[in-house]
Image (cartoon, rainbow, N blue to C red):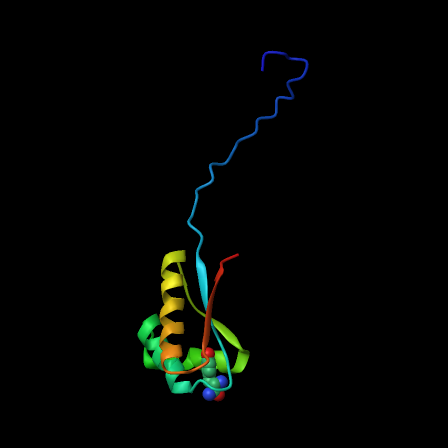
Length: 103
Ligand code: TYC
């Protein structure tokens, strides 16, 4: 600025914002009918959990009503939800799995 009468002398820096792709939480919901062992199998098969991890998370869903079972890119999250819903429907269990944008 060349006009000294309005120059406050304050320098402002603009921080470069690094763009991160949005992440999506995959949520598993409780219900009264899906067998516990089936939920454990789902968590092992589609979410790469050990039997012990899967059992622990299944119990959290059972007690609290829902839990985040993984966080992924939009495409991977959509695939996981699809796999779970498909597998549950084939076995005629009412298990529900959804995804939600993080933050
Ligand atoms: N509540 C179910 C039962 O008592 C077990 C269950 C756990 C179902 C987790 C769904 O996402 C779920 N058989």
